[in-house]
Each structure stands twice: as C-alpha cells, then as structure tokens.
Image (cartoon, rainbow, N blue to C red; front, side):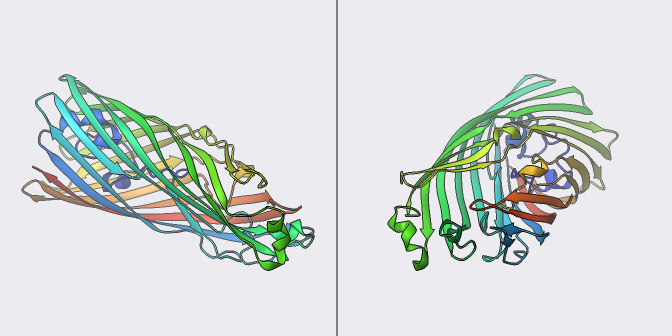
Length: 408
C-alpha cells in the first residue's frame, strides 16, 4: 500500500525523514539510487545494506454487494495487507577527486495483498504479488566546486502473480453456484535510466534535481485455471484451459527536487517535491494463447501525483543523530477506479529515526514510519454478471528499517 505501488523509502534515512531532501543529501551511499550526482560528496569508498519491513493493513467492510440480483455471498476477507521484507544494497567508489562509480540494488516497486478465498470480492481478487529487483550502476562527475552531475542505467526484473475466483455459475445460468479459480503469473526484464544534478551554492545549502525514467515490461507468462466438474461443459467448449498469457506493465517515471539547508552545526532542514507520472497506468490488458479465451481488460485510469515532504536532522552529539519528517502523498486512483487488488487513498506519512556512529567508519541506523490513510469507498461492477462490489476499506501501514554502513 505504498504510493501507488512504488516503494520510495529505501533505507532508514529516507524512511525517518519521510523522503524529504532525498536528492540533496549526498551523505550516504544510497545517493547512488536517489541522485547519483551526490556521490561526489563521498570522499572514501562506502557501502551500505538495509532491510525494511512493510506491514500494511486493509480491511474491507461490505455495504450491500450483489451479483445476479442476489446478495453476494462471502465474508470481509480478513486483513488483506501482506507484510514483506525489502532489502537494499548501495556502493560508492571514488576514482579520483572528480569521478565516482556507484551501484544500487533494491526493489523500487512492489505490492502484496491476500484475502480469504471465499470473501465477497473473490471474483476481483484473492491474492496479488508483484516483486521487482532493480540493478542500477551509475557514475558521477564534479564539474566545479559547486556543481556535480550523475547518471545511471537500470536493469529491472519483475515477477507477478494474480489469483481470483471465476464465477463460472453465471456463465451456466447459476450465479455464485459454481466457482472456479484463475492464476495469472509471469516475469519480465526491462531497462531504464536515471540522472541527477547537485548544486551547492554555499557550504550550508544543497539543491538536488533527479529524474528516473519509466521502465516498460513485456510479461510472458501463463494462465492456470481450476474448473470443477460441474462446469466441464465450459472446458469442453475450449474455455478456461491452461494457456500462455501476455501483458505489458509500464512502470512510471519520477522527477524530484530536493533541498538541504544547515541552520547551524546541530540542525538541518530538508524539503522535497516528487512528481510521479502514474498516468502511465491506464489499464490491465491480458491476452491469451488460447484463441477461444477472451482477453482480459481492466480499466485503471491512474492519474499523476505530486508528493511534498519536509524533514529535519538534529545532531545530538558527535555520534548520534535524530531524524524526523512528514509527507503529504495524494492518491493516484480516483474513487470510481479503486480496485481491491491495490487500494490507494490519500496519505500522510510521519517518520522518525536515529543514526549512531560506532567508529572506524561504521554507522548503524533505525527508523519507523506510519502511513495514515483515508478510508476508501468502492462501488465496482462485477466481471461476469449484473451487480456491484460495494464497501469501504480501512487502510494504514507501518514500516520499520535497519541499516549498516561502512566507510573504507
């Protein structure tokens, strides 16, 4: 239940500051992902590894769902939020006074939801899993004492699985009388790029601008169907047979403008505006190798968003830092296009964390963020017969992150 299904919080610093200043910090190896130009601020080789646990919550409350003129059977589905551990690794290597090489491996997109198999919305979704792995080598160059530039390439792997019940009974004149099951799964590799600029007009002020391109995935996979004996007439007609399946997923580009300003030796304030072109997500279209199986089309019509965040870093001592931040993150999904597979409401993100320098170039950090989200209303037409899935969903999420950093 991240912003859309983006996972922007990639380490404790970004989590604690609610992503404020992420393109302007340039203090940690994570800048290899957030803004490669910031690598010129890192004087010695450095590496960091982090793990974040995301625990979303999504509880559906039925408000009179129907199908085929009758109340839709089933329960609320339980808590559909599916927890996940998201790892990340970052490396920065100085070549000389001006050049830096970097590498980032993380998961910038993902989603997970799972409902009870007999819930009222089973014909739309039971389970959804989307995992990405992004490999991002990069290079940076200091043009002048105040200006640095950087760029990188993304090699991105995607793995997706979608499971839902199929109302075979409606096709045979008995709505909700015979349920089958469909599982769509597939993988893809896609490529993209990113670049950034870091401007340091004074020792206390840094301004970062970064852009990450879209990544187009062409997914080749399979569709597996479970059809009970009572619906054998459908398989005899050539429908709902296991077959190859194909789809395209266009993961959106982002652009960020960030600032970092040191008020004094103890305090720094951060800001960020991030634009995400979610309008790339127009529909889910799936075609099948079986010519008798009709293609699947699900309109989504997502819209672009602008997230705004502010944060602060307080140096408690030579070893300890405290961090905090807040962000306002609007939903890319309008009310008429909310889907139970991925529910997204307007969010307020509040983060906090601590960083500790052990010595000998070793640092550890921990952070926590809570996502406050509005309740989402849903009134969704049924896929096989007249009726609607009607209800509202309470959404929230807790995120925890740990990181170790070593400067060589």
